[in-house]
Length: 257
Image (cartoon, rainbow, N blue to C red; front, side, top):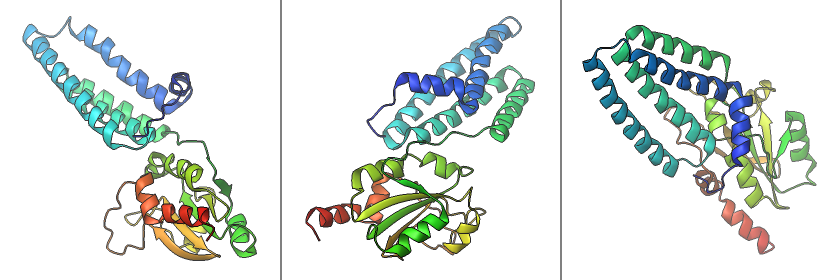
């Protein structure tokens, strides 16, 4: 995961201000209230079993998040995985106490899933937010960058939210006079998906999609057209830089080619 850490106050503000984080915090915090109340009504055997299972769950949880912290490249993906594992362990623990409590938490997490969504990374880096018409104009005018790398995303896609930090950070590193970065939100302009050959949903969903244009002609994209519906690997900065040969483009610019 990226070594840069956000300001702790920024994350605190997000936890309080973003419904997605705030409701998850309340749901997990409620377990401690339920747990303290359950100690008065559960038998000593069940209480002891629950205590052992809680220790096992905490150890397993921290092992998993340590692994994810080393593997994940963005905070958005890390937080999404952490919350997912937390839900699994919490539901498993409530099964020991009472299955009615388990059903209650399942309903709560389902409501959170339906009513809220994880906020994406909001910074743009050196990328520009574009409408399809603006993108078409930039590509056809010919007086801008030779190359345009464009990310097609949508806020309703969990994959886009998990990878939302990668593209802006890549743009900061690789943007130059020959290579520009743009972002098109297909949630706002769904008709553009067909124009650029992107399937936004279903089993063939291809969001986010990245397309590299050279002098208004598409020369590469990721994920590539896939008619066998094989899974796409997780989006990372390393994967995108390698696929679009961004290091080579940067060297060519530095060397004046």
